[in-house]
Image 1 (cartoon, one colour):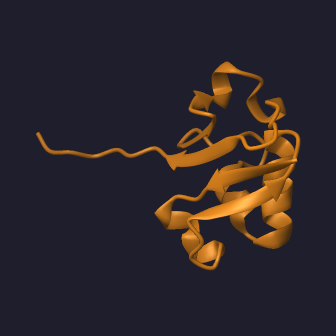
Image 2 (cartoon, rainbow, N blue to C red):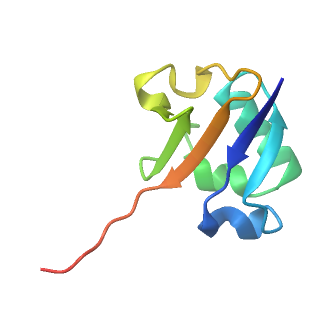
Image 3 (cartoon, rainbow, N blue to C red):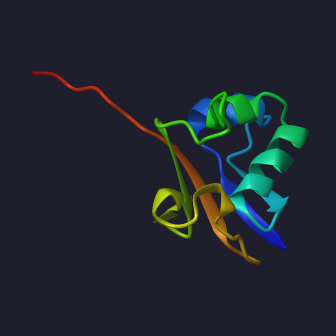
Length: 93
């Protein structure tokens, strides 16, 4: 099943500057594996050495945070939208 993954600007250098890519995956875990196969190096930016989504990376399926769903086992259906959003910190006092 085909879904769209929205790639944040900091990761686009790994996806040949593509802002969106189409994937064929039934879970977020499979989507990450497919992206790694197509764009080597992207997985290490998304998951830590234990295979968990990095705490400063937010992944959404249809605007729902996977941490409140089934994490990487969250299903992806035809025409779903997966968004990868890096956490942003900063500001001034």
